Length: 206
Image 1 (cartoon, rainbow, N blue to C red):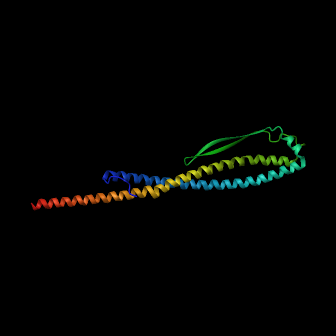
Image 2: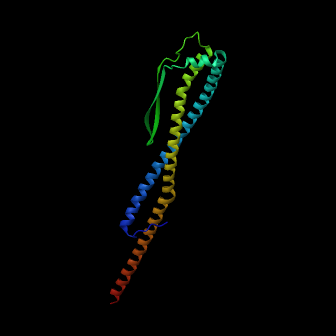
Image 3: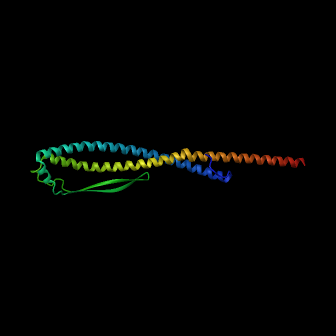
């Protein structure tokens, strides 16, 4: 589509500068989009591996916990957890990835994991708590990866739209308009030359 501009040399120079900037911006955005996609694919793979590990450990933890419940009885098991002494805190920091602020969660655990006498508890309970202790960082990691993937998806889509707008709309429009103005100026130059030639002939005829 030809832009609505005055077909003169000043506009032609402006459009050529705009075209140079548009092509440069297109290349930068395309490189950014490709880099974001690479990071996105890597995070998706990490998330897949983290979930597989989590599912495995969660099944093991639940099996151990069910066995502990069978051996100890539900009442004795509940009495053990009446006064928890362990505290888990999650804090968030942010990392800039290609202008996207991606959260980084940090887990801090304080207090004792085993808050009961070893005589009262079964080994299965110890094992289930140990596995749960291993699961917590995995849960936080999955939340971190999920959020990063969502943010990167949004940024990739936004960048893709900008790249497409430059590639299929702005750059072709600028090229068409430059071509149109160039043709108009050439036509005007030819008309001016013809007029000059006619004037010269008229002067010579006199």
